[in-house]
Image 1 (cartoon, helix red, strand yellow):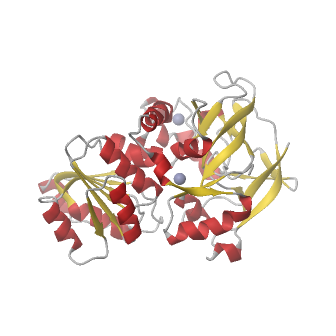
Image 2 (image 1 turned 180 degrees about the vertical axis):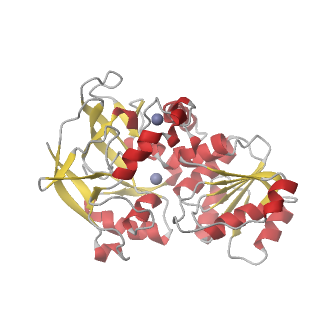
Image 3 (image 1 turned 120 degrees about the horizontal axis):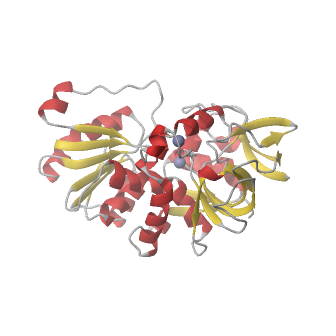
Length: 376
Ligand SMILES: [Zn+2]
Ligand SMILES: [Zn+2]
């Protein structure tokens, strides 16, 4: 069938993207879903910082590629052997397909699925196949999703079924920002009620971490960013303290405010400076979690003895260490009870015509979640 999709032909475009226009909206030929695959009508797709990292080349992926990875939609057709989804089902897409059989999958760590990582690296679906053609040639899928499209073919292993009463623009956020931000607090950090939590970097993921810290009953929630408007926003979402990372004596002031440091510190900015700050404000015996994607050439330097003498822990968190089939429905229930008010993180919706400009807005940092409605 014919479909419409945002295609990235080359990485490394310079801002402003409204001028360089790295994404071209093109007509593609979508093949029918193969065995274990599903045709989904995309209803809403969030714009995430890691899309921008592919566009500007910080996170290299094979091009040309149909880009986007945070999405929700409706199943329209299922391929051979698909019994767990049927036409009409509402689904959230998850950007690492999990095979269910490899060692990490068996160990309940599907974010680390080995065949999933191979497929994502190559730009194929989990089957190893590509289903998108542009001008008669196969092009790459973006981490098994390719969300900035009106229709997509994905592996059933990239999907989680959801109830039909959730608006799609909210549902989409559960595929990346919510899973990553909330999961980092609950699954990776395992932050406990009454503990102190700090979040560095208040984008879509960091703000979800703030909501999660409030939900689990953290006693102090420290928000840290370099933009003052983000700090104000974090306070309105439950942060008890806010610090500009560039302000004087920031480490000392945070340590004073938290009586010696923070129990669980989450870094979501994807920069070495942010992770150093995160480590420096973590309490003795505390845990530092990094969920931001830094450039592959960047290395962290820390005082080795502090890990031993202060029993410190540093952990990485990918997709919030989530099991999507378990955690997406759980977090949606929390949302419905008003415990995870992710609708407060929506900045607005756009059509394909505003997609390049929307990445300028994302790049400025002065936004939360912009959502593409591909049928608008
Ligand atoms: Zn994302
Ligand atoms: Zn696996």
